[in-house]
Image (cartoon, one colour):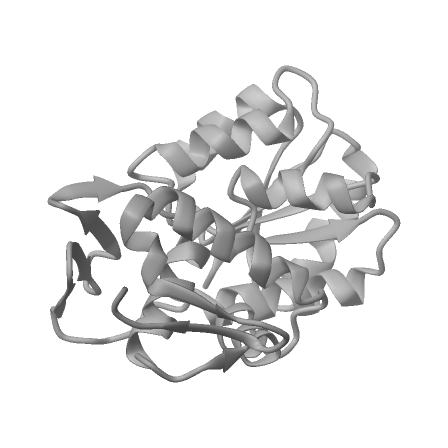
Length: 226
């Protein structure tokens, strides 16, 4: 049974979300402020976190940063719940490591579908330990670790999956729509700018090695030697 941590200061909304998720077979725990949410994330090691943006004690953006920086919580997918629906707000959410973004008011049915899609996307794959070396980049698929020139780079789960997808399709152009489908999941509700934002983050984190990610104008991306 998957455990979902709901970090939401509106108690009625938190209870409604938990009720609908539990009907789908999930186990839910609730935190009502940012500090309690951080403690419960460390204590329960949930499979997914639903995180409100405006929280007492600690903003959701700051909490997400801390979760993604800590080794024991960095791989937990985070769906942000917020009343802020402007494009810049979504970009900020993705920049701090959110894996999906749901704008209030939302239907509980939509939220349940988003949760299912993200959990499916981050399902642990049974694969043997594999080390992939490409130039100065080393990818450990069993540990979900990327290193450039021997130095480990902190990637979110989505960033790792995006890079791994491009690596597996070395030299082949991948459209933004295909990347959305295969990295974010069939039921993901979003636009292709999400892909562009994550590609930019990959290149920035990888430094010079990020030049291997080539833009194919008007279509998508591919990975090849510089």
